[in-house]
Amino acid sequence: EIVLTQSPGTLSLSPGERVTLSCRASQSVSSSYLAWYQQKPGQAPRLLIYGASSRATDIPDRFSGSGSGTDFTLTISGLEPEDFAVYYCQQYGSSPCTFGQGTKLEIK
Amino acid sequence: QVQLQESGPGLVKPSQTLSLTCTVSGGSISSGSFYWSWIRQPAGKGLEWIGHFYTSGSTNYNPSLKSRVTISVDTSKSQFSLKLSSVTAADTAVYYCARQYAVFGARKSPAWFDPWGQGTLVAVSS
Image (cartoon, rainbow over all chains, first blue to last red; front, side, top):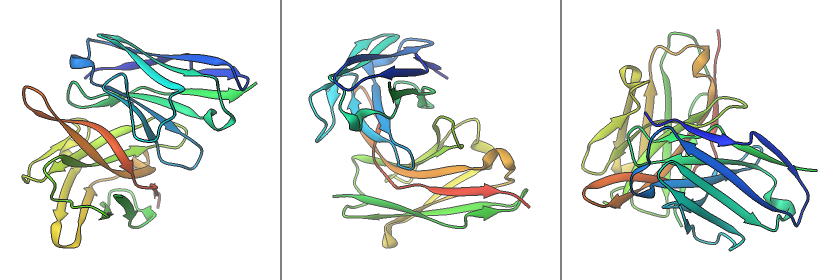
């Protein structure tokens, strides 16, 4: 199965800052079949990005995704207070689909 | 809009079978555009896909759990269920059900998850 490694594990940032989260796959993810999710404490994950770069419904345009092959990124251009959460990537190009271990964004 | 809600016992004894049900509202569980999945998350840890079913009746399970997992569906009640047998403390987690989109490339294949149920905590303990 494809192993996804997210880095860094934790980021301490201030509102307004721009942040780029990394998701690296152990082998190429076919057709850029990669999604990103946001999870807040006590809540289910929420879909942000699918197909590596397509925003899900009602997701603000400060969230953007890019990448292909084995390297993918999620960028948040201007952190809002509600963006501090844990972010997960998921690949669905190969079965079983797998998730990264998550990157936690915390307020500095 | 589609909503999903998990239900079932919050405590299961070791070696017994964990049973959960997901009730889908606001949409048809028979739609050919979606798979219907179970995912779990141990406390403080990441997400693990357990398995899904497709409206054709086919199921697919994570190889790491395949020998212990059964997913079934009751379309008349708009519900699908998870059974995980021979549970141990390692199966303690929040269990989510989710709708999984299908992508139609060279072949139909399962893709991203949206929406998710709120999740239900299942503890395995005597």
